[in-house]
Image (tube, rainbow, N blue to C red; front, side, top):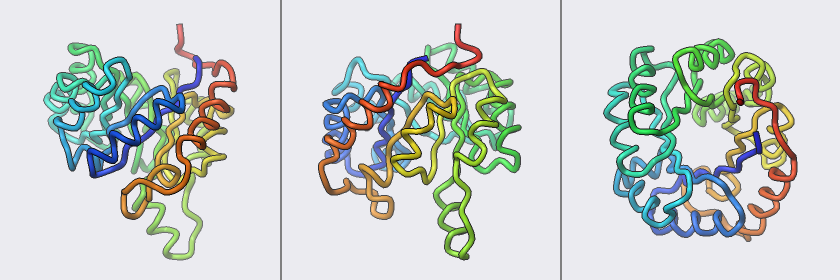
Length: 236
């Protein structure tokens, strides 16, 4: 499949989020993500606002669903989300419920393996339960806590090839990647490139970062889109 660039709007102010979204669209970004901080701050109202402002753009609602799967996915789908996120550490029945809602409302389900003791097996189980895509994710708190102890924090690239090899659905790598590493993920077989903190977002304050974000995003899009097709085993 052709690689996709997704910008995560991990912002708590809707005005800043909209400004960042417009910047991303001008730069050539493919998907917008209503990040977890944005959803916590603005909820369904924020997703509806994104849908109204960008009627033809895929919108990922990063719910990180752990329970109440069908209802959460249904609500976000009705608000205009095209993709929803469920956690691998939730009960398998919750994942099944999100997948069912995805089928009923025509939205894609992204399964997130954050916190799995076996990240590769977690990805495999998400696919087996019906998720359309896998997010290979090293968490914010995990990275910071381990680094604070003076140890090397895990990086999504550590096991990205193994995760890609374990599933037939598209994979996205998230969590502590540098810009250069994020741009490299299609070379690992992961075509869904997400850009968020710390490029466009201040990772500590969750406010818009400084600098010419549009120019940087445009260069990222040119690099990722210029990579060419990324083989996905399950692609028809």
